[in-house]
Length: 275
Image 1: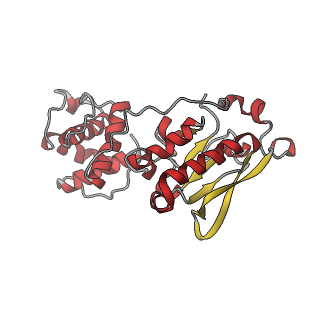
Image 2 (image 1 turned 90 degrees about the horizontal axis):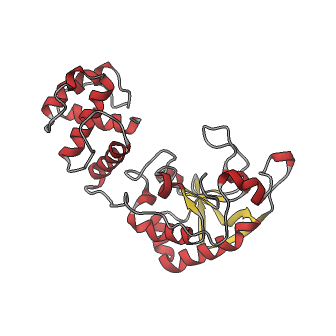
Image 3 (image 1 turned 180 degrees about the vertical axis):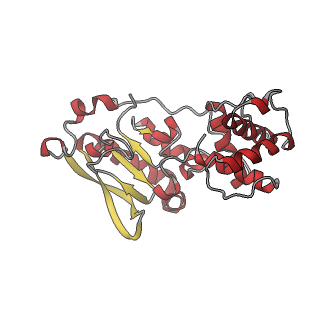
């Protein structure tokens, strides 16, 4: 259960008058005490033995009941945090924010790979060394963007295009031309495709020890402020159906959206398959 889901629980319990603590995503004693009051009051049918279950499972039960009360299928009311409950929590957050849930859960990414982009485990053999391996720099080129790019963290600063590995340059050029023709400048700006979040950058993965795909110059990030690393479909702006054609244009060229495949890091697209 992630922090965002705990905040959903805390907010609902506060609205019900059972919780007086901070909405901080910390599943502590005050939250647990409120959950025990909230389960019988929120509606639905909890397991008969719910009061004997752990505080953690009781919190999951409350969330599952809360989802079902909003016509969101969280699966069995069993207190376990599985894929269905995780999706339901994201969907509940989206419904509370927007009044509806986008039907993205059943959409399968396009599996095309016309350029034979490698799996992540095979990037060095396909692209060569990453940017800090043996002091070498990947074979980088510049690809112009047909719409003006703004630096996401400093929108007064502009970029004219992308710095990427030579082996992905032609594909990227075709992609951005198609996106431009399909959406037009006004829609590109409305949806945030003009907010540049990064391309070649020799660094480790955020919070990890492996080298990022950015280190090979085969990844691009867009609009990181509205598509944060751990945000799922319930919060990321690029999960909106208006962006589905954008992602399909990338996928038809063999690029991978981590948002579409793993439901996190919706800002990120890469010319490498998972695995």
